[in-house]
Length: 407
Image 1: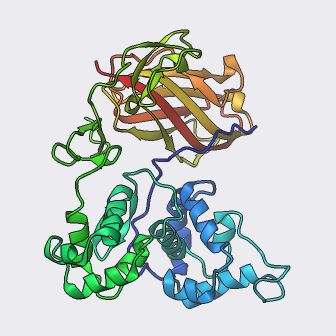
Image 2 (image 1 turned 30 degrees about the vertical axis):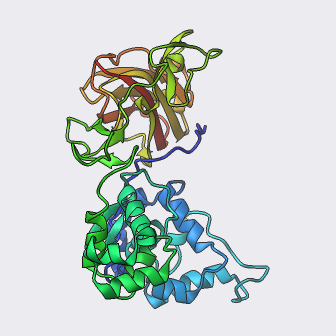
Image 3 (image 1 turned 180 degrees about the vertical axis):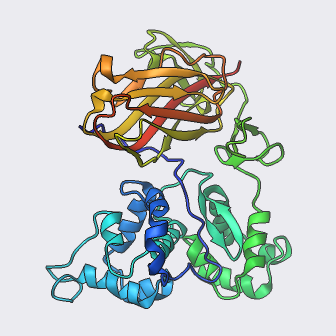
């Protein structure tokens, strides 16, 4: 049985990407069995990170030189990957070329171990092939860490600021400024970090002088957001340092009645209540609703009666209104599963009682158990129990679709 949901932005698990002197090479294959469990969790097939790696490896322009020097990989690993792509005739761009369809297939290539997978993931993220949330870790470049929003702002400055500003306002050395201007347009962080004369000083100054966050960007407190915006929705449980920059000013129509047939008067508003089955809802600022996905890749073994998949929510108001859970589960006996949702305050709701209710649907509307005056920002948990110990499978991902209000 397979429950499938559409792909949303994810708050996926990430690996640090070290580009200051290139990503680590893949010479430590003798330790593969020890590390692979963790690596498989981070690069599970079907996650954005995995899709980015597969997209890169299957690119028409992939070559030994790119794998060996750009990623960079150990030469033997690079050649083994190209041997697979070239197919039986050993010639690329012919009829028997092969494509990678899963991370397991990549991992099975000789010479590919955890270090190679980590380097491929780092390169895919740094070149923008991986879908990330705005606070998702892109990589560490010359010792300077960037999330997605910070990387976007740094590249925008590198592409648009005058040479004079880059040198006098940003404090970037003249030689690095010359490289930045000559390389325009710069499209990704790997390109930026590997320009001649670009080092830790350049990367640090680009980050330091582009700190004011735009609407929707992550923030860590007052003074981070651009004028007119406030930092909202930082979890109180320490699960994330981030909130989101939002425009909290009044929008005409806020509080108006809405329904499936009566839309809110502005695209800046959403209709709260409809996702819970209400006939009439009310309009609220659009930032008060969001979807959060966790690519759990949790094995549901018959010998392990309870597993827990956490998911961190940020950037919403203070308490929940609509709560919808969407599941991507593959299991041989899904009607045996008992699903429970836990909010950041420890309150729980029985989502589905498989032994009495049958196979869980892919989407569950939460109308019981979770109070509507409890915390919404913070660590939510999905507990999957199999009290009968029958069947096995995988929780590949789960999504929380939430709306919120101020308490």
